[in-house]
Image (tube, rainbow, N blue to C red; front, side, top):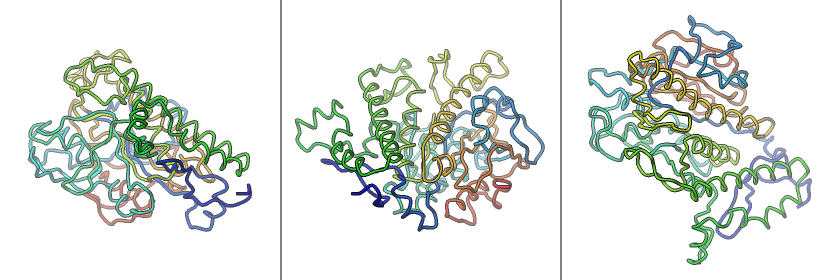
Amino acid sequence: MQPSKRMDRRTLLRGVGTALALPMLDAMVPGLLQSANPAPCRMAFLYVPNGIMMEHWIVDQKPGVTALPGTLPSVSSVLAPYGEDLLFIGGLTQNGGRALGDGPGDHGRAGANYLTCVHPKKTNGRDLQAGVSVDQIAAQRMKGKTRLASLELGCEEGVQGGSCDNGYSCAYSNSISWRTPSAPNPAEIRPRAVFERLFGAADLEADPLRRARQAKYERSILDVVTGDAKRLSASLGGADRRKMDEYLDSIRDVEQRIQAAERNRTPAKRPEMPTPDVSVPSEFGEHARIMIDLLTLAFQTDATRVATLLLALEQSPRAYPEIGIPEAHHGLTHHQGDGEKIAKVIEINRYHMKQFAYLVQKFKATPDGDGTLLDHVMVTYGSGLSDGNAHDHANLPLVVAGRGCGTLKPGRYVRHPNETPMANLFIAMLDRMGVPVETLGDSNGQLGYLSL
C-alpha cells in the first residue's frame, strides 16, 4: 500500500484469532467525506446513585440560560478546566421515580426509571415491567452500523435476585439499560471481559497449552497483530503513524493495568460486598478509569456508538477508604442534617465527579475525524435522585459533555421550569443521533436551548 492510497474505514489489523479495529485515520477521511456524516455521533450515559448534595452542584437560578460561572461549587469544581465543553441542565424531573401510589422504593424506581422514563412495576419476581431505555432505542434503530449495538458497563456488582428496595426487584437497581420493557441489560463490571469483547483476546490461541499460558496474560494482544501493524504503519503518513502509535499504546496501557489488577487483587474488605472478578481493581477510581478507557477505545474504533456506565448502584454499600471514607455511601446520604456525614457525602460526590472529569479529558485528547472525540459525542452525567436524604426526584443533577457533532452549544447553564420531563432531553438527543421519535415515557416535547 502506498502512503497516498486511501484506506477503508473498516480496515483491521489481523493476527491469529483476532482482528483489531482501527481509529479514524487521515487516510480514511477522503472516502468518508463523500458521505453525509464524516464523523459519527455517539451517545453515552453515566449514572451515579443516591443523589448529589445539590447546594454544592450548581448555583440555581430562575428558568433561563446563563454562562457558566467562573467558579463552580465544590462538587462540580473538578470540572472547571472543561467549562467550555459542558452544558449544565436544571429543572428536569423523573416523575416515574416517585411513588405514584406504590409506597416506598425510591432507589429501585430511580435506577429503572432513569433512562426509560417509565414508572416500573413494583415486583420482586420475574414479572418485571419498565420501558425501553433511550440508549436501547438508539441501539435498535442503528443496528448493523457498528459491530456492537451498545455497550453496558458498570463498576459495582449487584445482588442477583430477590428484593433490593421495599418490594422492588434487584434487577431494577442493577441496570439502567433496558432492551425491552421486561428485559434489563446487566452492566459488565469485568474489565477483562470488556477488553476481550472489544479486541477478541479470548480466541487468540486454539492450542489448550497455549491458551492456558494466555489465560495468565503473559502475552499481549498486540503481539498477535505486530506484523500487520508494522506493514500498515509503513504505508501511512507521519500524522497517521503517530495516531496509530498512540492508539496501540492506549490498548497496551489498558491491558497492562488489567493485568496488574489480576496480579494484585485483594479480597473485599467489606463482607457484604460481593467478591469481584480478579480483573476488577481494588480501588474504585482505577476501576472507573479503566472502564472509561475501554469506552474511549470502543468509540474511537466505532465498535459502538451507544454506551452506558453505571458508576455505582442505588443503595450502594460501597465505602471509599482510598479517600478516607470507610462508611457505606447509601447510609451516609441519609444524614438527617449531620454535618460530618454531609461532608463525607460531598467528598464521595467529588470523587465520582473526578471520574467524569477524566472521561471529558480523555475524549478531548482523542483525535476523531476533523476534531476530537468530544466534538462528536453527547455524554450525560447524573443521578435519578437530587436530594438523596429526601428521595427527591425533581430538579435532578445533570451535565452534558461534548458538542454532539455541532448540535450542542456547551459552556452554559440552562435552567428549565420545574417538572420538565427528562424524557424531553432524551428525545432531543435521539434526534441528534438521527433517531427521531415522537414520544418517550412521560415526554411532552423536545428540550429547548440546547444549541441556541
